[in-house]
Image 1 (tube, helix red, strand yellow):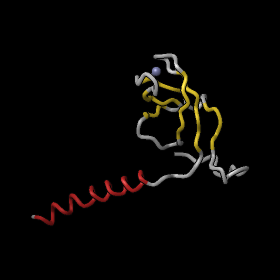
Image 2: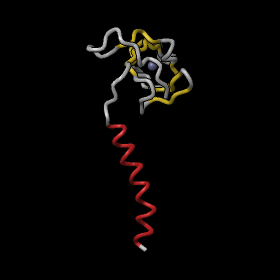
Image 3: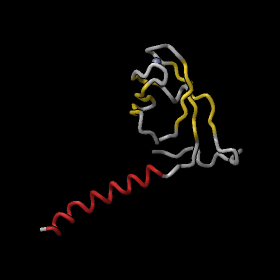
Length: 103
Ligand SMILES: [Zn+2]
């Protein structure tokens, strides 16, 4: 029956669409810059990231498994302890009300 197929596919389609919409929305919030040193190539680079939002990394607690921007090899980086400075939107200054949001 066609209606049974629709019943099965409709929720899946809905979830996919909602995920696409969620991921396409630019989320305002604190940006962080971490100065990371690659254990593979030893080079240092700045990595900008958003708490809780990234495709290209795998979170391991405070560390992230991600691809080095220089040698493109996968390594774990402790982005939390390597934070250089919190970069915020220009209009927001002195307001830290949303600093403790979780994921
Ligand atoms: Zn590297």
